[in-house]
Image (cartoon, rainbow, N blue to C red; front, side, top):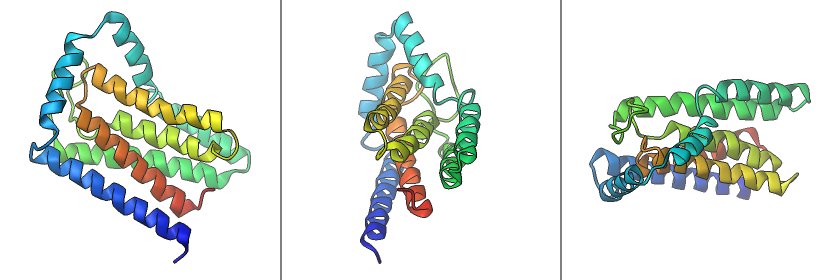
Length: 196
């Protein structure tokens, strides 16, 4: 086995183990419960109208209203610029992230923090998962071409994840689960598609 393949396989196994650990903790209400509730209460008490508007704007960048159109445009851009492998890499990440994320949500059926915005299942945060899948895929693609752009794409999921906690629509553990599962998908498809 090549060193690169071994490194990817180790990363995939470690990320899968971390995600399973987070899922186990959530399923059996272990470890995260206290901090989830404290953070939720803190942000609920300290929200402002301007803060809500700003966080909703960031949250929109990983929403089902924005990502399908954005993803189609990006995939078309890759395809028409003779970057078919990148288009497939990107589309696989987006489609698998959305489908598997929603499937896991349905399986766990975890209740969200009390909020006026959303009430479907909570774990994992698909906004966080999709932010990682979409924007970290770009970070990987641009890493050797333009590091500044890559850094922006790496920071964006963190802001989107924070927005979900600030808006009190997700627990911290939902966001962490979304991040870990999103990174797992990106790493898996980088390896599968041999993206440099």
